[in-house]
Length: 312
Image (cartoon, rainbow, N blue to C red; front, side, top):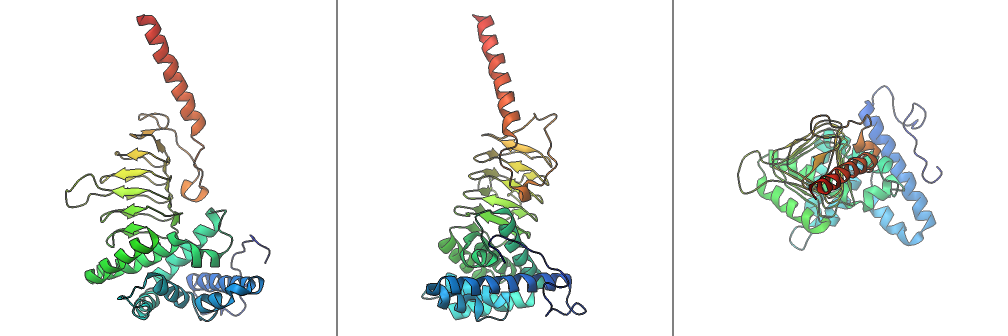
């Protein structure tokens, strides 16, 4: 396959799959895993120095969940939290819950399609700490829901230490998630993140103080949150909304609108905000609002200047 070319499953792309017995989800997982192994073989041939590493992390494993469990176990282990214990934990959790495997595949696809720097599925699997943090979080969340909270919190601590991503084990995360660059992402205990959401580095989904209860943001499907944005409190970011980089959001943001600034304002105004048709969480369009925003700022600046002139 030429570099950068992305093909999708068909009835002839994976002839070893039995169409009569495989579900679409299983077929998709098998196709992505076949791509990952093909990429690893290619990279091992092109760069012999990585051959042993690629064999131990990918080529020696029979499935995506085994490879992912092995890689996460080695990434997150410590002198007192052994890689063998973590491998068993990850593998048992992934193997017993098909939804976790489907979410991992959706996350791999999200990185491959949305991030132009993502050169292959295997590159994401091995090197994208946002992807790895998200998969480990899902296991911690599963433990949390099973009332295995000490282990969930221990895993949460290791994820934060290793990947610089702090997601509370109770937080609910959808699938098709892209944590782009991921450093400094903080997601609080009662936060909810929908499907097909893209979040850049240094984003905070936080509370507003030390109050207990439901106190963190709810992020709808298809939302894009720019780098350094902060969303505080139990506010709702509607489906397909866009949060500009560096914004501080303290209010609800309607679906398909854009909020920018500190404090954040809706592009087009609160009464009739401008709406977009695309899904920004997938299109990754960070700047389409700028011309309208600048136009409004120029109008405001002109109005203020005329007011001062009249008062003089």
